Structure formats: structure tokens, C-alpha cells
Length: 232
Image 1 (tube, rainbow, N blue to C red):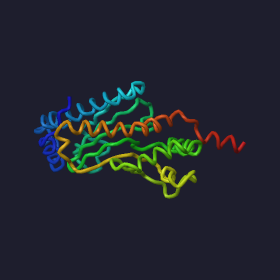
Image 2: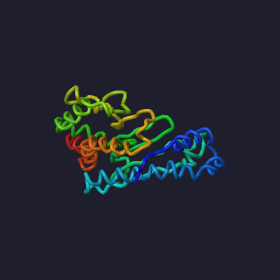
Image 3: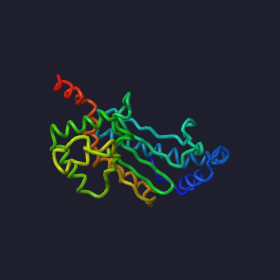
Image 4: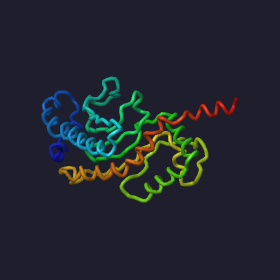
């Protein structure tokens, strides 16, 4: 059971940022495992259990990242990350096709939310097509999002919208390449106790209707087929 991160967690994150080399890491590996990786994994498993109770048929699984960077993608950086995260998601052959829940801890900030790492163009095309067919469900979800203060919409946008939206309220969704609904703040005292568990549970409970909506997009028809049929 997760009992909180510690000052040793923060010390390790800053330490690896300024000493990103094998010798330093090996000398502090026990601190990494005991204060960073294992607590992160325990927190993820506890949140997985919470979400599994809410959606037992989703087959959700939790993945906790490791500290080692991909050697093929170092780009002049050291071999280790100074941040860790977990994701909770449904199994999928194309993992970018489905959204996920996540929590991330870095030296300066922590964040959590739900969304896509980098959604496929087809996923976003299906989203726009569904909104055009049935705008009311997304209008309600958008109003709920606009009516609270914990989460904000973080998006990577096209230079121009891909299609006209059914209403001004829905226009942001027609500009997005990818997105997440997330919260970020500086390190806070609740991280060092079980208070963060309740915070994340409350947040994920709010996000579940959004996850339900976006996760089901994978089963929608390909909107390109309708365009092809119309042209024949």
C-alpha cells in the first residue's frame, strides 16, 4: 500500500538531474528503488484497483515507467530520467489509439490526468465525426470541464481547424491533433502522505466519463469510408 513519497524521493530526483551518470546512479540505486520506483508502482497499483472497481469490464492494466532512457534516443542527455510516471490503460495493439490515465512526478512539479500521448489522425477524425453526428454528449462534457477548476484542456493544435464545429462551444475539439485533460502543480505536502491517493481518486472519478467517451472511439466507423462512398 502506498504511504507517500518522501524527502529522499525529492533528493534523488534532483541528484540524478545534476549527476546523470552511471557511477552516481549505481551508488544511489537503493534510494531510487525504495523512495521513487517502488512508491510510484504502489501508487499506480492502488489507483488501478480503484478504477477497476469502477470499470471492471475494461481489463485495465498499470504500467510504471523505468528510469532508464532509450539508448537510441538520448540526444545528448544522460542515460537516466529525473521523472517517473505510471499509466493506467486498456490493452491495445496500437497503444496510441486509446487514451490513458496517468500520474507523473518530477523534481519541480507533479501532474495527473487523462488523454493521449499522441493520438492517431484517424482517432481525431472519428472524434470529429462523432461530434457532428451527436453533438449533445460532447457539449455536456465540455460544459462540465469548463465548470470546474482542477483540470484544464491541454492540446496540440492544427494551424487550421479540420472541419467546422457544430457550435462555438465545440470548436476547440476541431482544432486538435492530440490532447489531454490534466492538472499540474508544484510539489505539495499531500505527496508525502496518503492524501494524494484521495486526490487522484476524486480526479479520476471526474475523468471517467471522458475516458468512456474517448476509449470507445476505436470502435467507430472510419469516416474516410463515408467520404469515399459519397464520391462514388
